[in-house]
Image (cartoon, rainbow, N blue to C red):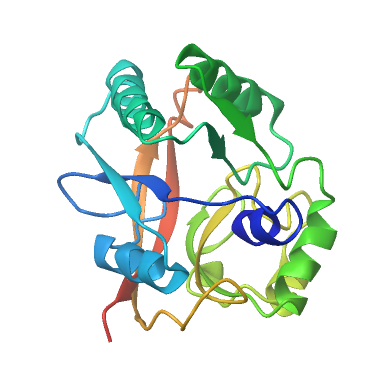
Length: 219
């Protein structure tokens, strides 16, 4: 949606995509999407893809160094602005703006402060298609993983879960829509649960959270 509005509403010339993957597992961080599907997605979007490989136990410091090196390289190539799909998380917006300002670049947020229910409706009406690849077990049960992101999915969300998953309740893989030249093909594999430590503070009885991942495979 951010790419759609950058091109249609803001008439921005988008030069490339930038994302991070796990160097060990070759999957998109937190989404769990395999790298070759990410590359297929970029090919359908007809945009170059810049990938930053992260260590398995990456620290915040090493992450920031890797990101800084990547954006400085793009700046040398004539890119002055980075765009993000953030909607209402103020602390994340400030963080991105601060880090980009350090290297003399600016940030753009084409979806900023949009009503997330209306945005979800627009996403579906425009013909975008997505699959839910990861859900936070604290917010949603495993049955939501692997579902199509559509009107039915949004209507079934429990109270307090953002329709766009802006608080990290769920993550999606978008495989078709107005900005795609062709659908990205995949098959849905098994759903697996992975346990992660909660950020501090957490009680002794509540130190872990389960995330459910729907594995997407090459058809």
